[in-house]
Image (cartoon, rainbow, N blue to C red; front, side, top):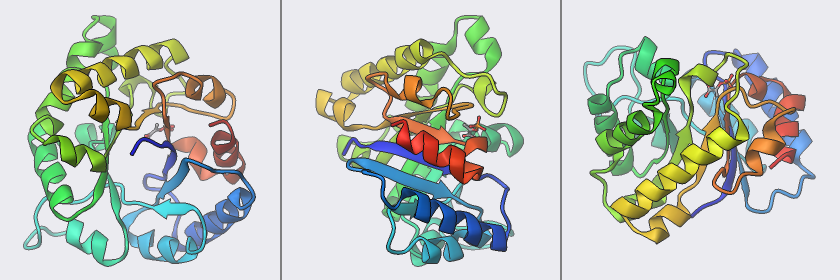
Length: 252
Ligand code: PEP
């Protein structure tokens, strides 16, 4: 079901104590906000998922994972499976983040396996994708985004899309301070929704939440979120400070 979403990707930030403090602060600061149809999501590191989940109880905060391995279990030192996430009450996982793709070699093929494993374990997926700067400069951004979606998600049936949230994150805008203009975001989101309509149905296209990610800050959030096909944001740096994260939530 399409909803407004503000999701904070904490990446490899915040230790155990800092996680407890930040969850407490967010909980307090959003308590009286009229959230209506807005989901507030945070993605701490694996080691802090349990404590964050516990501390987020009785609040609107949903705690999700930043990644998972595609196998059920076995000899995969250092990895975490979908079933393990479920077993501690985590129901959503971020997949395909550009840092996973570029720093950890996650290909479309690996991502397809991860997508399948997540869905088999009834995890919702926040699926990230987006073009590099050179793709945009050479006018290949639509083509690149299309193939990322086709390669990792378009084998799914229409029903599976009830468990998918898309996050368009132009790589050139992640952590760089450079944001896509609201018009660039809207143009790409409309393109993505059209792809969903052509491949699936208008219902799937209309019901899928599409988030924008890439240097969203309190100063630009409102304008980006005002665009009709932008359903919220995946926030990196600005999700680590309660004032900024709250301001972005208020902007939706
Ligand atoms: C991200 O990592 O998904 C992200 C969008 O980061 P930032 O907001 O810091 O650009």
